[in-house]
Each structure stands twice: as structure tokens, then as C-alpha cells.
Image 1 (cartoon, rainbow, N blue to C red):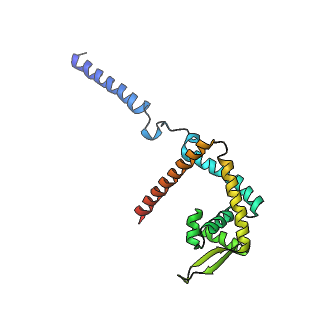
Image 2 (tube, rainbow, N blue to C red; image 1 turned 45 degrees about the vertical axis):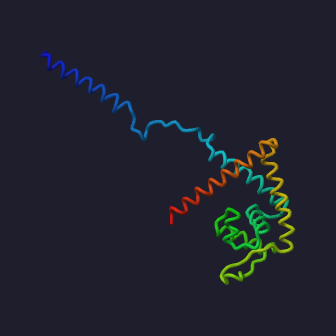
Image 3 (tube, rainbow, N blue to C red; image 1 turned 45 degrees about the horizontal axis):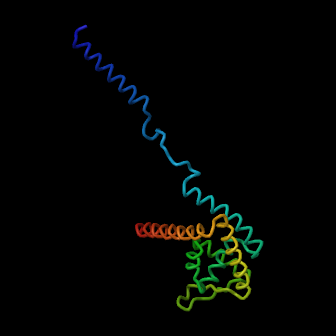
Amino acid sequence: MPVNTRRNVGICTALGIFAHFHLIETPPVSQRRQHFTPLDQTTTHRLHTLSKITDRISQAAYLENAGIPMSEGRCLAAIGAFSPLSVNALASQSNLNKSQASRAVQALVEKGLVLKTTSHNDARGVVLTLTTEGRSTWRRVMSVVEKRNGEIIGCLNAAEAKQFQTLLQRLVDHARQSAGDLDASEE
């Protein structure tokens, strides 16, 4: 075999081996195994888990101690703390969407816990306040809130609890800012 042919075969063999390893043995980027943090160790997963567990326990506590479901209890707590409120303001204060807040308000009105009156500033709007019975139920709801807060952070010592509250507020502020940035970009 002439030298030139051997060299060409050698190059083709080298290219074939390169092609074999590069194209066959290396999966496409979409199929390569990526190194992610295990799901159960991610912040979002753990926050969601904590939220779901505490909500299940809180739901039972609201029903047992205040006689109303947690969604209504959260709305009642906000109305008692921030009234007078519109339904939109209640939704914001309770971290609910407007339709969820409206349904909770209707249930609270039907139970005689909340009074819904026409707004003096906007005839189309309503103002929410507590009735006398609502104020009594609000005190029971706030007792549930205080007890549940203590139970949730009960595994922390005083210094850790204080640090946790500071860090939690920082995370909430950051999330609100990020959400505001998203809202502004959608306008």
C-alpha cells in the first residue's frame, strides 16, 4: 500500500473512531444526565411540604377551636385586623384570589360573622366589618393563629426563633419584590 493511502486510511480510521465516540457514545444534550439538587432538598419543595403539613393541622385546629374552615378563618382574621376592608383588599391581605375571598366572605356573611355594606366612596364596592358574633369568633381564630405559630416554631430555641422570623420576613419581602417585578413586566 502506498504511503499516501495508509495515511488516508489512518485519518479515516481516526475520524471514524472520533465519530464513533463523539456521535454514538455521547448522548445529545437533552438526554445527558444533569446534576440537580435532589428534589426533597430544594427550598421550594421543603417550603411547599411545610405549608401543606401545617395547613392540614391548622385546618383541624380552625374547625375544632373556632368552628369555621381555615379559609374562612384566615379571611375573618384579616377583616378583624385590617377592617374596614374591600373584597380586593381582603384578597390581598389573605393571600387569596378575589373569587376565593368572595366565596369566603359570602359564607362569613351567611354565618352572621361579617357585615357587608356599600362603600361610601364607591357605590359598586363593599366594605367588610365584623359583627359582634364575628368579633367573638375572631378572638378564637386569633388564639388558633397564636397557638399554631408557637407549635410550628416550637422546635427552635428563642435565638433561633428570632433569627427565623427575621429571615422569613426577608424572604417574604424578596418574594414580593420579585412578584412586583413580574407584574410590572406584564403591563
